[in-house]
Image 1 (tube, helix red, strand yellow):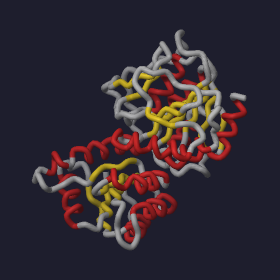
Image 2 (tube, helix red, strand yellow):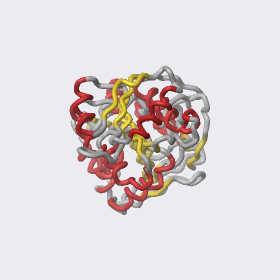
Image 3 (tube, helix red, strand yellow):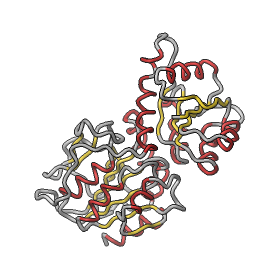
Amino acid sequence: MKIAIVNDMPLAVEALRRTLACAPEHQILWVAGDGAEAVRRCAAQTPDLLLMDLLMPVMDGVEATRRIMAQSPCAILLVTGDSKRNLRQVFDAMGHGALDVVNTPTLATGRAGEAGAALLRKIQNIGWLIGHADKRAGCIAPSRASGGAVQNLVAIGASAGGPAALAELLHDIPGDFPAAIVLVQHVDKVFAAGMAEWLDRGCGVPVRLARDGEPPQQGTALLAGTDQHLRLLANGQLAYTVEPSGYSAYRPSIDLFFESVATHWRGQAVGVLLTGMGRDGARGLKQMREQGFLTIAQDQQSSAVYGMPKAAVGLDAAIEIRPLQEIAPRLLSFFA
């Protein structure tokens, strides 16, 4: 991939250069020292992937992400010195379309390959997303099995731009909502708990991390909280699993969760695919539609990144295509 670096710290830039040198399939396209320069350079020479710092002079990474995704959209990975201390900026930038976040590798050990292993894993995942690879193993057959809990379920998948979209959607869902909600958002497990707390503070329904072995809870939104896949089992419980181990999609995979709902859920259900880069969730949404469930994709105008919903529309997986602000009212009317 052609990768650009946006960072005002020379040591951080050098650490990123050394890390990328460990993966010769990647090429550094250019380096910018602040967000404003990055906006200009993206317009002139758009990279496949942008490694964006958050705290910079002139223009920070949040505003730079917003402008780039509006003017010269590309995949953006946030790379910052202390992501846990900058959660608000992380989620703001993800709301504008950044895909994920990782801490800046350090030169302290002198071994860039080890220090940058987490960064290289993130880049590999994003490469899958933007490359539209579709290698699958152990897929769930789209047949309705017996044993699922008989109640109402909303299954929601999101990626780039998802945190802000989820916050807006869940804000309009009341606490007495007569359905369980399960959220699969592409976010690192390190930040999942913080995201659940962030969503919970501004939403009408309580939001928390999904626990292994529990069933979906009516009137509660459960967020996938590990880097394993979240699936619905035949007994109606949620389970985290590393399988299928050969599956090259992002973890947790929206496709795999939607497919497990199509297989095992016996009550009423709605599948919702929100903003995101790539194709994850489109095939799973198609399986939900084939099983008779209502399926909704966010429209292009309200999506920060019109990748996953577009893929769903292309597969004829979405029965309805709606702007974000119409999705919560539609769910309320459906389960009324």
